[in-house]
Amino acid sequence: MPLDVLIVDDSAAIRKILQRVLRQADVPVRQFYEAGDGVEALEMLKAQSVGLILSDINMPNMDGLEFLRRVKALPEHQNVPVVMVTTEGSQAKVLEAVQCGAAGYVRKPFTAEQIKEKLTGLVAL
Amino acid sequence: MSNGISNEELVQAIRSATENVFSTMLGLEVSAGEPFIERTAPGPAEGVVSLIGLAGPWVGTGSISCSAAFALKISSHLLMTEYQAVNEEVLDAVAEVTNMIIGNVKTAIEEQLGGLGLSIPTVIYGRNFTTRSVGNNEWVVVPFDCAGERMDVQICLAPNRGESGWRPGVANPQAVSA
Image (cartoon, rainbow over all chains, first blue to last red; front, side, top):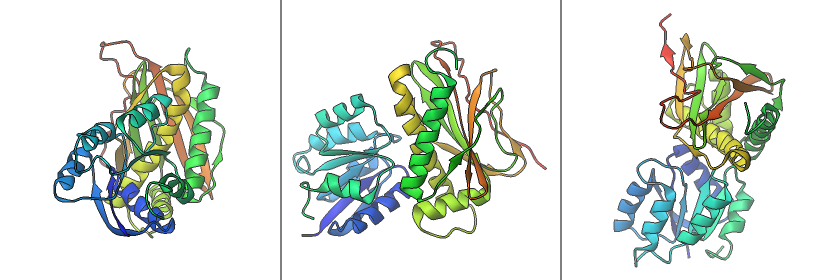
């Protein structure tokens, strides 16, 4: 069943690239939603349910880890897989993301294959 | 750089990060030239300069600078769209490439320097401008060649001296009319 996917990144370029990469990876997507930071993304989730979230960490207003914590505290969205896609590569950040409930962690730069590999098992491919 | 990390290690981190980002995200090969040290923030008199601040036990700035033509090439390859003029999408693409390069350098050097934070990138585009940094700190500059186009990746780092307000390498861009 096609997914609604929310992409959260302050870079419009990365939001565009991730859409292309998901299509290349044959991820069945019905609709993409985009947000430039955690605040905007939480606002979107008030009106829209999604089946997958890809989120950056370093963003203005609300970073990706705080956004992740808040999503996991929302009963209606807590089971949505959230994959962090970020330049942050330190073990401390990866561990923090996993502890906050991240379903996966992909470092930029990334390939379509790496994204697909992370999504395997999280969504029906 | 004094203590913490050698210039050679920093150069290696810049080379590795830049080559990785260009080959993975842009499908372009870059070749590193001879690195050098500058006392003032280097930059072109025109074109695109993208800056990111680093903060933590060490503080400073990372940046890339290139011609407008090369910024168009970077953006076209990253977004698979042909760009003829520098616009918001081009500047956003250059900012993201800078974020990925400096972010990967940061990850590589954090083992020696401790955890570092990255600022949101700032991109400057124009003609007849100069950039300079406050203080007298060393910038490690690595020039890259990509099919005849040049791009410089440069980083300035110094130990964080607390709340003195001293922020090495933070560039103060100045616009100068022709």
